[in-house]
Image 1 (cartoon, rainbow, N blue to C red):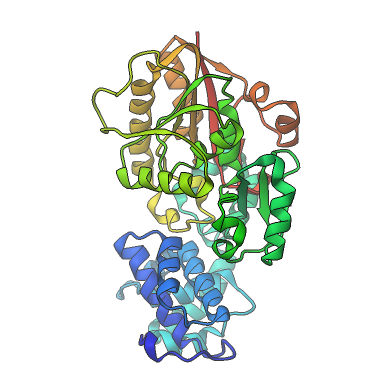
Image 2 (cartoon, rainbow, N blue to C red):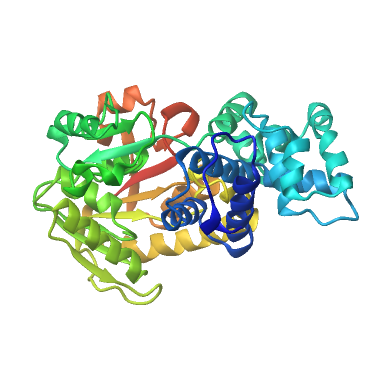
Length: 436
C-alpha cells in the first residue's frame, strides 16, 4: 500500500486502503509476534495524514480480526481443506462472525481482499454454520483451552458474559498523581475535551468515558496522571505499607505499581527490580514526568543471588510474569498465544520466583503475589502450592487489607479477584501472604 499517495475519502464504502493497512499490521502481529496496540500506535504515528474515521476503522478491523482469527482458521480447515487459510480470509470471516452493522457486504469486501472463488463461497455459508455449531469458539472466538478453563471457574452463564466483555477494547483507567486532587484533574482533562468519572471506591482512580488523545493534554505533559488499570491500582493498595517500611517491587517492569505506591506514600522507602533494563528505564522516565521519587532501582539476573540479604523488606510485591489472560480485551492477540503449554511454563516460573523472593520478607512482613491472569493454575493453585511448601507464611484475607468499603462494593473474597464482566477492569488476581 502506497501510504504517501493516500488521500482521505469521505465514507468507508471503499475499504481498499483500510483493508490494505489491516493486512500489513495483522501480518506483523500474527506472524512476527508484535503487540497489537503498540504496532497500531506506531503505524499511526508514522502516517499522521490518515483521517480520524479511517484510523478508527483500521483499529476496529485489526482488533476484530485478532478476536476471531482462531474461529476463522477452524472454519477454513473445515471448508477449504485444499487451500491455505490466508490473512484476507481471516479478516472477512472475522467481520461475518462479529456481524458489525457498519461493515461492508462480504462480497464488496472480497473485491479488496482478493479472495478465491472457493473462499467467497465458503464465507457465504459461515453464518449458517455458526448458527448450527455448538462449540464456544463460534460465539466467543476463544480457544477450546481457554473456554474450558474459564467455564470450569465461572460456570456457563458467567463465562459467556465474560466472553462478551472481552469482545470490547476494555475501559481506560487513569491514576491521579495526587489522589486528593482528583476533581481538579477532572476539570483540567475536561478543558482538553477528555471526560472522566471518578471511581466510587478508590481515591485517585478515574475512568475515561471516551478514548481520546491523552498525551496531548496539559495534565499529561505536567505529569498529573498516568494510565493504569483499576485492578493494578488495587494491587498497589494491597501492599499497605506502614511508615518507614522498606518495600520491594520485585518484578517492577515499567513501574506502574511503584508509581501508585509512591503516590499514596510519598516518603516510602521503595526499591524496584526487574530483569529487563529497558523496562526499568521506562520507570525512570515515568518517575521524572510525574515528579515522584526517589526510588532505588536495579537490574537483576533471572537466576542466582539477589542484591539484598534475607529479611531485608517489610513488603515484597511480586507482580509475576503470566499468561496475561486478564488483558485479552486490550490484547486480543493473546487468544492465540495462550495455550496449556504456555500456562504450564508460566506456572513453573512463578513457583521459582515465589521461592526466590520469599526469604527477603522479614518476620512479620508480607509477600503480595499478583498476576493479570484469570486462570486458576497461575492464581489460587499457585498460592496453595507455595503455602504447602513454605510453612513460614500464612494467607491473609484481602478484605481486611482493602477495607470494608472497597471489599464490599467490589464483592471481594479472601483473594483479590477482578473480572472484566463484573468490575469494568482487566482481569486481576492477588493474594497477601504474611510471614509468621
